[in-house]
Picture 1: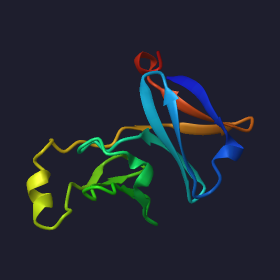
Picture 2: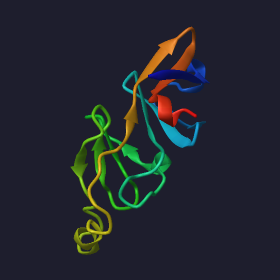
Picture 3: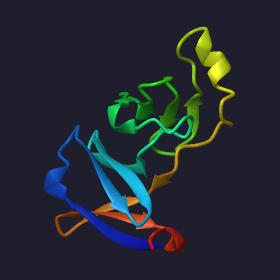
Length: 122
């Protein structure tokens, strides 16, 4: 694991989100309920940006486009493309169901750090 300093802690207050680029990846940092999450910045369903996604009280992120939902602790799919009601079930087959890639975070010396696998950080 390669830990990379990505942002001063003060730039991500409670409820905020911030996009950063780490190597070839665009990540979205979210401070929700005093936990900092790092995830890929687009939905695995159809690559819609997650910066407009809704974060739920039970720590799920719900894509604004087709309402695919993912657990922020595990990345597991909670719901795959349920929206719109008639078209959503057809769109769920547009791409195979995939978990949301997450990355470990830590706060140290006033900065947010993201853990990246060695191959992804270059």
